[in-house]
Amino acid sequence: MKAGFIQTHPEFGRIKENVESALKEIDSLDADLVVLPELFSTGYQFRTKEEALKLSEPVDGGYAAGRLSEAAKKKKIHIVAGFAEKAGKKTYNSSMLIGPRGVVGVYRKAHLFWNEKKIFSRGDTDLKVYRAGGAKIGMMICFDWIFPEVARTLALRGAEIICQPSNLVLPYCPQAMITRSLENRVFSITANRVGTEERVRGTRLHFIGTSQIVAPNGSVLYRAAGDGVEAASMDIKPEEARDKDITPMNNIFKDRRKDLFVL
Image (cartoon, rainbow, N blue to C red):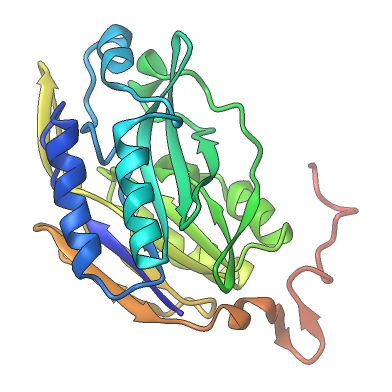
């Protein structure tokens, strides 16, 4: 299958324009699975909970979900996209998996970063694995990378590809996701954004781009530049992620010493 990402440069608050811009990239990309950044339709730096709630959208009936569903049906593909999810009076930093038949599942970010804790409700969804065409995929969002339990849980539950919508500002994640792939023997796709936002005085955020696709052996199949909109896809074989043997006598799951673990 072909798996890829769209590295975007959203304009804050301009949902329709951001969605349509991403759709143009999706339409031109040859891929069976496409990952979009975290909060791709709204931008990142909300000033208040009220502003986030106003710009957030429900999964059912939301503009982003609706337009992405149309694209997935038309191209017969799967799309993972980060968005601000409205659920009653709460806003979640979420990711949705969309297939040719519409929304397949939603993940709400478990580990909120910095001022996100002032804006979003803490994620309350499980770490589920879904079928997406010829592969099993799991979703995590940005700062989840620093908690290895997230990727390990998804891998133990059968994920062959981990999709990571992101708005990265710290420089460590791209290298860390190489380790997440290697230690779990899975593919990972990080879709990041570029540009800067300074909607909160004294808090200027520069997004580092460098979206990437990593193989189960830790090799970087493709890494984008640190600036500029970019779309890329690579041919991958999901079945490679089913082989958990490091040597004829070492299997990363069977060799786990759970008797020594704290958790």
